[in-house]
Image (cartoon, rainbow, N blue to C red; front, side):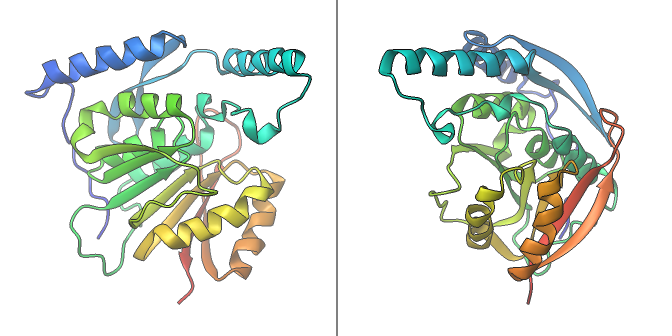
Length: 261
């Protein structure tokens, strides 16, 4: 079974009024805190409006300023893992690479022996939801998962045309489990911290359906180089691809993983 192209529901569909109302409500919630910009993204044969943070650096600065304020009041500096740094606010090149790979005809994402109908996809650390939105536009059932609630608002907004096959869930992959398995687990730029790998690898095993794949986008960091041997040593088969994107001179690396039989 693969992800076959399906135009799905567009903003001009019969329930466009409901789409518009939901979109307005989400934009209003997001707009209370963030300035956004919406543009039409072209990914393979797909095109859809995508709303993102206008200035991700400003969001990071606000988090840092709040951390400084709390330190001055309490006299203690919060550990980095408690700062909730807004990595989600950046539209990562890796997400674009994954989206293009999924959208390309004959993308090669075959789920062996699934037989469950629509492909089920988990967009892990989804950020603003580009990878998962592409999968939903291609006909997959998608669960967007991220630690940060604002990211899930953006993911809901950007995937609205396909909302009937989309869910969101706040998730900490270090400690949470979903109680379900997926044909495809996506991860755009989630390998940058070496310390997260020991949590990600068992999470993938716990949530990958038989015959399924993990597809990771990585921009060429040193940690990505180290990850290759690390994950192979833990019993995964790794295939490497490259995907050129217009936002950077070097291509995105894609790692497709499956457990070794």
